[in-house]
Length: 173
Image (cartoon, rainbow, N blue to C red; front, side, top):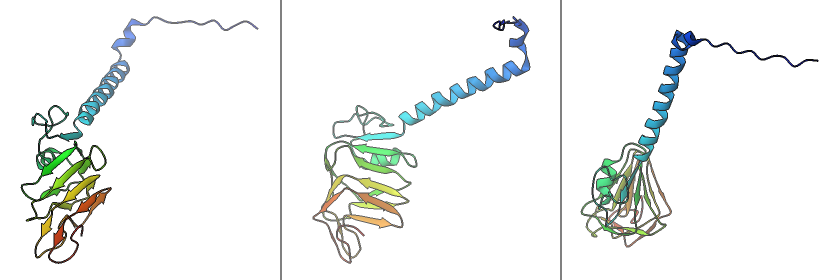
């Protein structure tokens, strides 16, 4: 048997056809979507560090916020807020919501410290708090001195100490 002969046809008009333009346009759209998703995913983590530059949008360690609430407030729904080692003395109760994941960069490497006059963390709206030391929270006449989960939220891998509440759940409710 003889091998089939390959033939090619040079058709310069094909590049000008509506089908070719649609394919090229679709290809450009797909590339644009991929590039946009890479840009957005780079923004999907906010950073906190005692030595950060405190420069919005807090999307690198060099630009990191210096306090946790600032980075949480800058985060969009479901984003990660990654906290470097150190002790973060809270000026007021920290609120984590909107599915934001608040995570210590190293297990128990970061400490969230209240002043023994207010609750450390209000957790709501599927917020997550992971891998922190949480200490010196107080909820006089209330529940949850360390962490109060209002509706839905998750506390995972945390060590909660020296917290108290006037009603129940000195550590977590």
